[in-house]
Image (cartoon, rainbow, N blue to C red; front, side, top):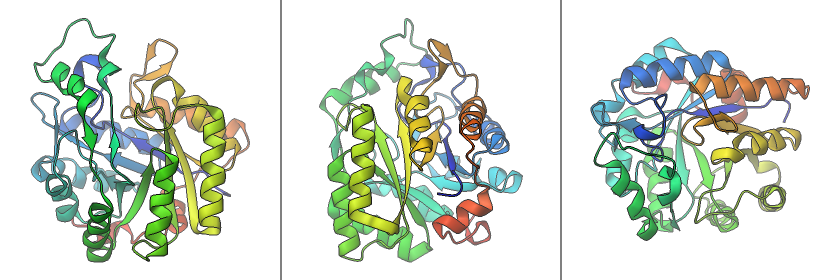
Length: 308
């Protein structure tokens, strides 16, 4: 890649309010942190929504619409809406906001998987809300669902129906083969934006050898038909995104993926993480893609063709 695309996942559905006072919860928080992340250098802003009163992940399109238009009006960044939603949401719930908003890009998990984040709140001494601890604990018996039929349906509704392209989230090697199967069936079309994800219990571990293995497998399966990006959970975030940059990939940071900026030090904002990885990449003599350049690389439809 001649330019490195930085994505920023602003709030997600993994971390809970008791884990960090800096996790954006309200639409106003999400707006402010998204704009700051874009100004710091993020070409893509990846978004989930939360109940403004409790911080619990919500699929409610009305909540999304409280921040999507403002972010679009205030930045040139590509807005990427989740289709993964939050734990226990149905496919219909997860699609409600994207179908209304018709964004340039959506995330798309490339398979069903065990998704265990029960240990994420291990450092929490006192919970702010009653939903948080049970939400995390029940993931020891939780399977995130995205069957082949689900994936094809999402692509049909969002891709063919709205011209939306996808951040294909691959949590394991098998997910790359699932994506290759969809490419062979012509369900999906290149260029494929392949997000390799490391460090979630139930997916591939955050071992540097696995990062190289994921890249080499994607290269073998997709050749010139894909654009490679990397994210890693928690303490692995900056190490793995730095390695991705060195290996010619793109990167994703943000408080969805890690709450920290350094060892034992909470990040005070998404922009702080974007600023840090941008500095590291530029120190490695790598150029950062603008939103316009990211749109060109990923063949996106443009911000003027969304419904917000």
